[in-house]
Image (cartoon, rainbow, N blue to C red):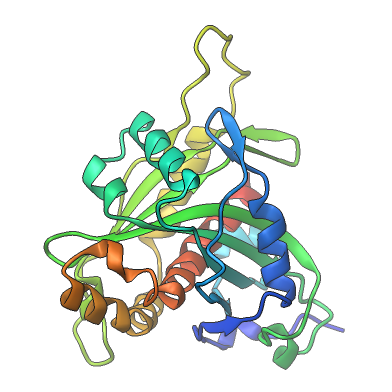
Length: 287
């Protein structure tokens, strides 16, 4: 069966999923072993916060489509809140300090464990390709930690923490990057476009002291690819994500602190995480 023309379909509709959902199970398994800097940790997920999942179709740039020899790019994602005050959060903040993420961002962030996967859709129907309940083969996946906070101007600040990994035999160092979505909560249908997304440098995890450096990897190539991908996020996707995250804005305004967004923002985390995760998956496959 030919590849369905799913690139004409657009949706960003997070929904809560049960622990028995196949995406929830995949996330739990991945969270049990996460390479945070120099150590491997078991991420402590919060069972009291419902998990949110989404599936959407992302347009693949022509250059990427030509290199990867495909046009389909359907991504599924699930967000799981990390338990507030847990040992995992303590270790995360220590790690973020080593890669120069500002303390105020780390301290005010609510952290989520993200699992994003590209669906293998060539033999699926268009309806199945975007059906969250339909289990399709996974073509590639990425797991990362996402921190969400807001600054004094109500810009959304996303901190991405990646583990070290190997893609097709190539070593990629883990590290962190901070992405700012200016005036993000103003993104509503009918509201003029906000300024472009601002992506900070991807900072790789430091080498263990006293140990020789690993062979040169493709960290810089990855950082360049990722920055370009983030700079070209379609405005309509950010508008949809901004609408999804409206409850976050209300909660933040009422509570006056970003740390209070945990219950309101499971859906927001997956809306942001699937957009960031699409770039991660694409760049890993490109490299």
